[in-house]
Length: 383
Image 1 (cartoon, rainbow, N blue to C red):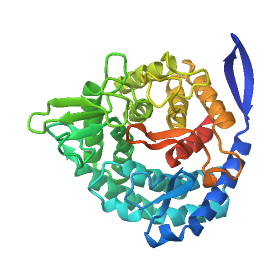
Image 2 (image 1 turned 30 degrees about the vertical axis):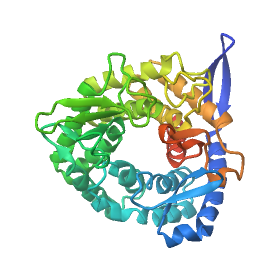
Image 3 (image 1 turned 180 degrees about the vertical axis):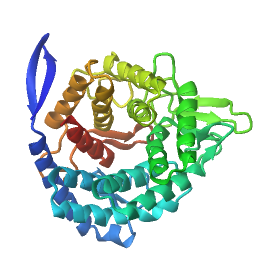
Image 4 (image 1 turned 135 degrees about the vertical axis):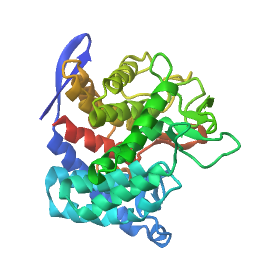
């Protein structure tokens, strides 16, 4: 049983999230989703292997090359981690195998999401050496996107008319793959790339209040920053909610892997911004961008809250007296009580009310797989 403290009318009241019941509900939803996948014959013909979202009442399946392809198989690993049920182990292995080919993909920075989420959890839970080898190969592929002059890993190869060498704050999440590959292989080059990227991002990507730009454009000849932009936020000066969550999670993880106190200080600064920002509503679930002038009449982003909650649980282990656990508990309680799908709804996705890419009018107020992934991770970490 998870005790949650929340402020109500100036007083503290205890609320409870039963983690076992939350997982039981997640299992039932996932069974619904698995049936939806099996019945999507068009997706099967197109070799689309992973469920991403539901828009306009229709399930969206994606190929293994999509940046979100690894989250669903990783959710299955979390269901197995909680239940130890052979059924979930078999399903986790089945859907993880569908992403395996992406270990050789050098055209994306998202191999941490695509490969490390499923294969990293799979290796942690089973010790399967085949998974270990996939992780190392994926790290080799990701490393090809590192530019030593700029000191960062390139994010996107598209829209070359907009930017030369774009690096997005999301890229912090892919460094865990590199840290793990050094531990598994003994090759410190992966570690050095991860540290260089983290350091350069910390130097250039943040404003004095620890809010982050979404996209930085680098000159690879000089290493100088050419532009500071947004692609998914409200405007170039705004704070995109999911980007802040990626930053918090990324620097908390970097502290875990390096024990460099500078990363811990960075994570705490980002956490303070998220937890005290005046636009954060009472339930803690942020609007899609902290600076949208139409707040409160805009969409929330449950995925940002789930990522933040999971990160805060880890951050609490490094600064146990700072109150991060209570803040994570409140977020988890809000997600559990007001942002979970009704049984059988949303094609079997667990959470609803996430925002994917509002400026592109895509995935607004929908369920989405990475929200479910970090929600399940937060539930596990809460215990």
